[in-house]
Length: 249
Ligand code: PEP
Image (cartoon, rainbow, N blue to C red; front, side, top):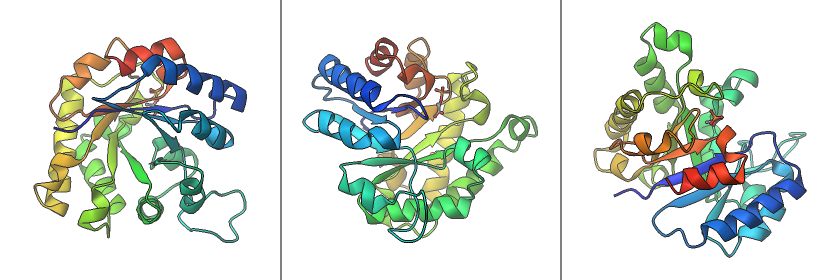
């Protein structure tokens, strides 16, 4: 049985003061979660202070991005070594906004994932097809390529720290969630592809989250699918009441 993971991606929202206040309230509200993991991904500017607030709680901290090198002349970048140093546990890697708006390739995403595991960070590895790709019936081809390229050269030990997130690009921030059966179909496919790469047993331990307009109205039907092990939540994670309801689905 895979423990459900509900992860909040705040993207480029919230000042340090807002992020800290949110983290303090959510920590009180959620208390001892026990049967599920909660992860919040504030912007870089708020990571250290949010880490302080949640350090004695069940909530884990994620960064929204990472560079693949540990240090060096990469102006403006943040490394896995630095994120581990301030108490991050997870990093979102391969988000479609980074792939599309910032030109991140499968190869670069793979280097980032390798760097995460090197520094003890769990990558939340996002994959997903665009609307034209779905319409052209290329969903499975795209997902298989993203998985195979993104997880290249990971050892059996490395893959155990990966969390995968299926995020159809057409569902992100659009209010148009994938139907639970659509999500299930792709999640089962992802598990199958991972099984081909790493052997059949390993994928049964890897959480596969669904992301794309998740809210407290649709979370239950998504979580009822056998291969949906959690959610990566954007818009609905910005408001305390909404996010609490999603976590307590
Ligand atoms: C996301 O960007 O990861 C996401 C899932 O956003 P939203 O929930 O707003 O669709």
